Length: 151
Image (cartoon, rainbow, N blue to C red):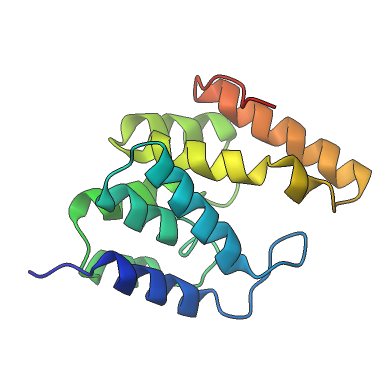
């Protein structure tokens, strides 16, 4: 089977998240692009970069699990997207465990957390939200065994 190219995956992800914004009100595709670039900068391969573009698509209901299962993507890319998809009510420890157990997923999650915790992104949020998210991201980094982001 021929797999989607990275430009095709990017176009698909941008279309799937069309009209969605992040907590700061920015177009959601900016976050996806930043995570994909973060994966590339950390030495990620094309399968991981594809997963970066799609990492929130199932969780945010932009695309369905059925779509992902049938998509022209490698099994590794699908597994990484699946690992990064939080389940409703799932404890952070279980989520972190699934990421650690999935080859290639940790690097994508590290890029995701790096962008989520970017002080420039957090600066536009109100103080309680900023504090809550900063603690949440730090806890997930600790569960994943990641060093603190250089600040």
